[in-house]
Image 1 (spheres, rainbow, N blue to C red):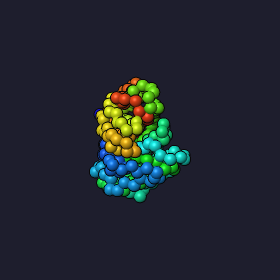
Image 2 (spheres, rainbow, N blue to C red; image 1 turned 135 degrees about the horizontal axis):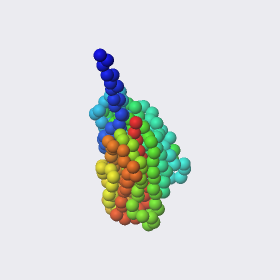
Image 3 (cartoon, helix red, strand yellow; image 1 turned 180 degrees about the horizontal axis):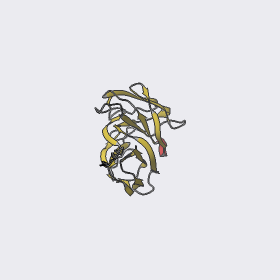
Image 4 (cartoon, rainbow, N blue to C red; image 1 turned 60 degrees about the horizontal axis):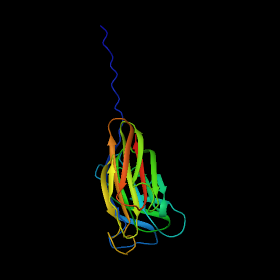
Length: 239
């Protein structure tokens, strides 16, 4: 009697994405103006160590001196990362995501080198698996113009992840961010909440989500409760 032959189902790879945290470039009262390097010591990069672990570090900053925008390099624990996404927007607002394949370690020194002098900034850290950059959508508006909603739409494949990041500035005032389509992780100022000190109105926020099933035309948005110089980046990662 012939026995039927069964072909085992192959597991479809999926992205895992864990938000680790945000670190500002200085204390709430510091200005940190006119520097080309931000150095962050002992930053947590998560505890899910393993050969397939990927660490994503997103750097944000706004303002600064004359010169060419952009990040010249980023290291995590002395390892050079791959720049997988970079947006240079209004008022020198920059959002860049670097990818690192680092199997071991739960904290690292992270160093960001800019091509020009810049002002206040910070870094976001995620860890996970199968995190390859797929696509992006960016919106940016000058102060006092454009919709208060920055949005994007993607045809999401099963197993993909989305990260949304905002950077903005409005003189001496902060605005509140509301994220949709992702889980909000941060909405913080990079300076005092009010006052004449440089960076008082600078703020940033992020959110993320993973999708077990495919979702065509999936919408994402960041709503600001007031007009500011602002740049929003929506990025898709997956196997």
